Structure formats: C-alpha cells, structure tokens
Amino acid sequence: MGKVLIVANLKSYKNEIEAKNWLDSFKKIKELNLDLSQKEIIICPSFTQLFSFFSYFSSNNINVKLGAQNVSPFDEGAFTGEVNAKQIKDFAQYVLIGHSERRINFGETEDMILKKVDSSLKYGLKPIVLVQGQENIIPEQVKTIAYEPTSAIGTGNPDTPENADAMAAIIKSKTKDIQILYGGSVTSINVKSFTAKTNIDGVLVGGASLDAEELLKIIQNA
Ligand code: PGA
Image (cartoon, rainbow, N blue to C red; front, side, top):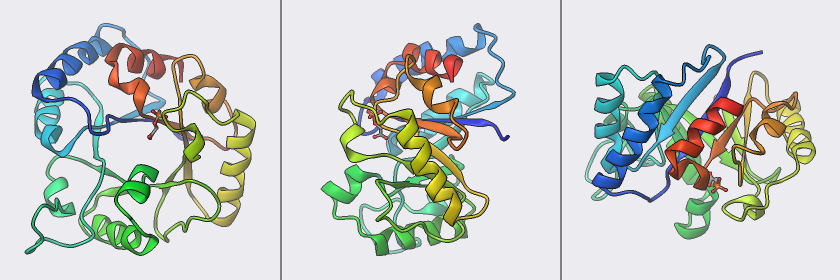
C-alpha cells in the first residue's frame, strides 16, 4: 500500500495576512511529531499565495508539497490572465484539474480538461483530476483521481464511505495503477472512515482545511 494522500484545497480564500496566519498555525505540525512516513500532504493555495507558501515551507523545513488549483489549457503565450504549467512548476508539483466548481462556474469541458492534463504533464506537474461520477472521462496517463460527488461538496453531507469505496473500485477496475482520493465534506471526525477503505488512497479536503488546526487533526487522524 502506498502513502495516504491528504490534499488541502484552500479554494478562493485568504488574502496575504490571512494566509500568513494560516501558515503560522500550520507550522505547529513540527511540534506534533506526527509519524508522516506513510502520509503525503499537498497544500493547494491560490496562485497569488503559491510563492509565499513555497518560501515558508522551505525556510521552515516543513515537508509538504504544493499544488495549484487550476492551470491554463495553453502553453505560455499571449493568453492574458492565464497561469500556465511552466510557471506553476517553479513552485508546485501537483495541480487540481476539473474541479466541479470549475466545470459548473467556468464552463470547463472534458476537452479543456484534457488540454490542461497534457500541458501539466509536458512540464512535469502531476495532475489530480477531479471527477464527479462515472460519466466523467479519466484522461490517459493520469495517476491520481479524486472522486467528489457534487452533492457532498461544501454541504456537510459526505458520501458514505461504502459508496465512495465502491466508486473507487469501479474507477480502479477500468484504469491501471491509479490512486483514488475521496473529496466532499471531509473532516477530522470522518476522515478515517474514508482512508480505512481498501480502494481509497487519500482525501481531498476543502472547507475544513481553511482552519489550519482542523487540517492538522485531519492529517493526524487520516
Ligand atoms: P469540501 O470541498 O471539503 O468543502 O466539501 C471539497 C472540494 O471542493 O474539493
């Protein structure tokens, strides 16, 4: 069994000062002396905070990885307002692609998602593709999928661990060597019920990760 992945999606929250406070709370991870040998932590802040998170974690020797929440479907070029994979790679190793909030609010299509995956892989970023159900395409070469039923996102109504495990099993039966995360209303209380399941390799945490102390509990309990 591989490491349990804990991915924190800070969404479009936190200005500079709030992010700094979050980091100062998260730094307590060092005092907790957690056994992280079997856990991999990936924090996904806004683009504007990627650099400060990167610097903070390196200068404080905190062993977590960074991810972006989105990436341009295009390579570098005349695409005003876009942040591309080559730029993200300077700070992050992962990128979230196809979050339902992007599909719903920004009209992100399967075609755009495929382009984003291609561009990420070209620059050595690892895509974490989010799917909401069996209807979504799982692009070839993607090794990490997060199953996030829309009804569970930000609602306090997570899927049942049994259902999430069954969905993870279906995805695994179709694709070789793939890790499946569960996302949707994960908290420090319910996290273990998901990570304990055979087919679930980790969790993607949104709202609960906005509180660094709660995220530390999630990491501890996962
Ligand atoms: P949630 O969000 O944990 O707040 O439900 C999950 C996500 O959007 O990735």
